[in-house]
Length: 287
Figure (cartoon, helix red, strand yellow):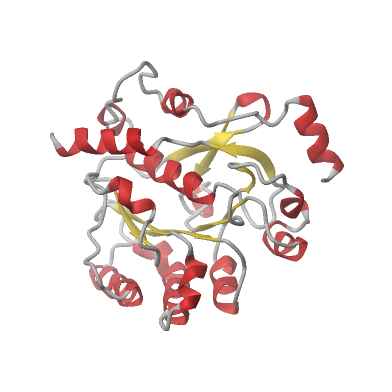
């Protein structure tokens, strides 16, 4: 472990835990008492895609991610979340999707979740009106190609034309085991290249930088959320140092870079219980 990380953990500069769901709700400005929070109270406060809290840093202050383009002062439009098995990657991704849906109405934001896994982040959000329906058995590369064509034809780069779309890819590297793996990563790369003018934002998670195709995706990422990496080389490719390879394998512990050249910030990602996510979804579906 690096000396600076050891010092930060020993001095308490890195929060011991960000697992309490009510801490995220409090940061969002929702009632943190027991019960199901009414996220619709936040929707009128956003007139465009805003920033979301992703975890806690030094002293317990929140870490914020702004998905807007860096030309507009944000950290986006695209990013990656990388971490080995057990680092808390999926839980962090889940909390980010929750924060996005809690802060934005379906008229402001749509979310498309793709994954090669049978069980994925999307499963707990099926009742959210923000979710783009993915027909069972549909080739994901075809979905991305269709998205490129559809948004391109409509010219959705114009402000206010339609909701922003966040494409969340859960475990991109697992597509490597399928025949369509290269086409999914390659099509995602193309979507990231042209997404800025199409109103599309991409967040791709992966366990490792396994192939050239995943490295192409990383090359288009503005912000990087990096948990424990398998090797020092992967850490250097992502954040310019070996720090991520030296992290303890604590769920949620990671480093956040607002851009490829930015200094990484240690933080612990929020963790939202699936039961709470589903309860909020059922509440939204009943409206």
